[in-house]
Amino acid sequence: MPNTDDKYLWTTKVTSKGQIVIPKEAREIFHIAEGDTLILLGDIDRGIAIAKYDDYVNFAKQIFEAGDKH
Image (cartoon, rainbow, N blue to C red):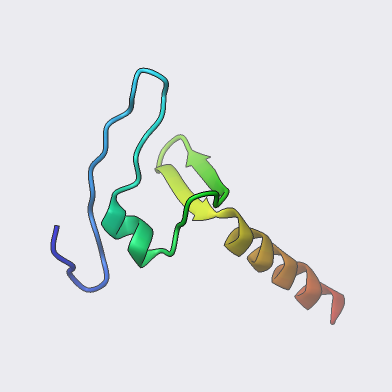
């Protein structure tokens, strides 16, 4: 799907093993490579979000370090 204001939409199917394929364009845009660990964040009302583990951990670390400065 074409890019509109930095918003994207892709589709994927779930296999019988519960696996999904992240489309190539999405992997390229979000710099997801083989071997990367991803986090699935779930909200019953809003759905599932996928984040790179390292990015999420770095973000959490910054939050804790900011709290230490006060």
